[in-house]
Image (cartoon, rainbow, N blue to C red; front, side, top):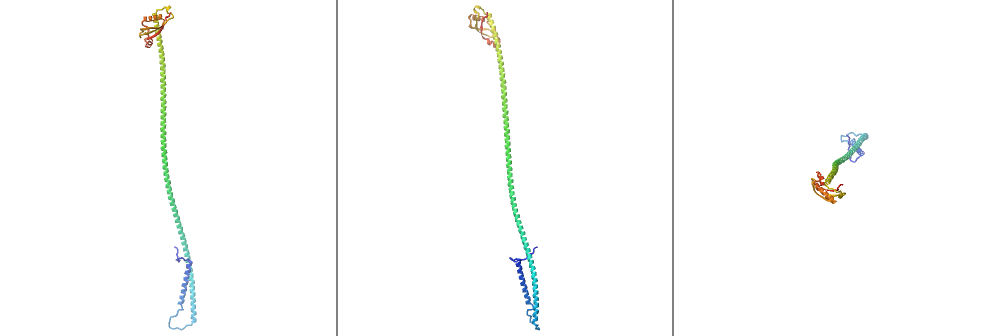
Length: 314
């Protein structure tokens, strides 16, 4: 624990020491004066008269005592001064130590205050920095969430767009496949139709050719039959024809003969030729009455109305 000494306001330790020394001297001087005044110098009380001592001896004795007293006072004064000096030095030491302690305490308090203020500033800065960091972190977190949400929205939009694109591509691919299938089917159908048409055409052509061949064959057959029966009719006419080489040689007659399906001669008409030959040819046909005909309708159709040229052969 420190020792504190009272100092008058505005006074330094040295000034305080001078004041204390002056007070002490005055007190000692006053004390010495009081002692001198209370010493043998005081008038003796009135009493019974004593024999009067020699004045000179009394004075000498008094001066010696006084000197002793003065010396004693001086010694006391010196001792008091020494004690006072020591006390004052101690006071000054204590005051200096106290001042030093106060200064140290003040410095410590100042340092503590500065440290407190520094810590407070640092704390305020730290709080501000923490608030700023917190606000920044919150802003960054908000920005991160917004960015994350935007990323998710973008990813979703991209996924939706991709899904839509894939769906459209799939639909387009399917449509293209269907179109190709339709085209292929159409080509196949057309090809098959063309092949069928070609087959039909070839078949019809073959049939037509066959028909034509058959018709030609039939026509040839009919023609052959017509020729055969025409030859038979000519032979029948020759059998009934009366020839005269002198009048008929190198002469002929074109006849038009209508026949029934049985060969019955419906009519016979000379068209052109030698009159004599024509007369005899008509007679010969009429005489025959029935001419040979084919039972084939087509052959008969060609012979139902026959034109033939008859030339007598000699």
